[in-house]
Amino acid sequence: MSDSNYELTDPNVELISTPEKLDRVAKLVAEGEFPFPTGLSPDQQVLLATEVRKRRHQRLVKFIARSIARELWQKIGRHNQEGKGYD
Image 1 (tube, rainbow, N blue to C red):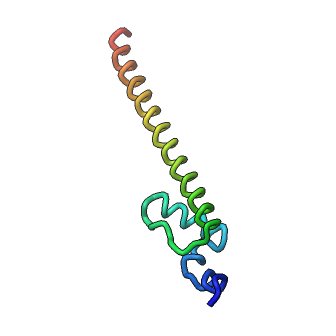
Image 2: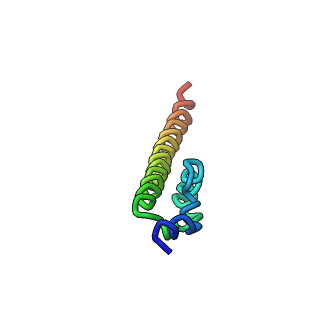
Image 3: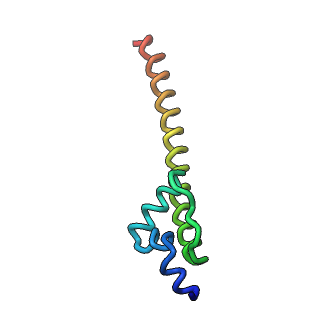
């Protein structure tokens, strides 16, 4: 059996065979709900790793932004509570 036949029959290759499947697997891997598949070609590994990295980066940025927003909201709330005694 040649390498090209192996690639076509490896079930993990099918996991990222379309953009929709790639998106879904990358999301699951990024969220830690699915292990990084084995048996992918080097190009497929790079493609999937890049998509996973993008999603993890987006999650981190959102987490930081929400944390900053929450802290600001709490400070505004405390400031408004302190200011009510002066009316």
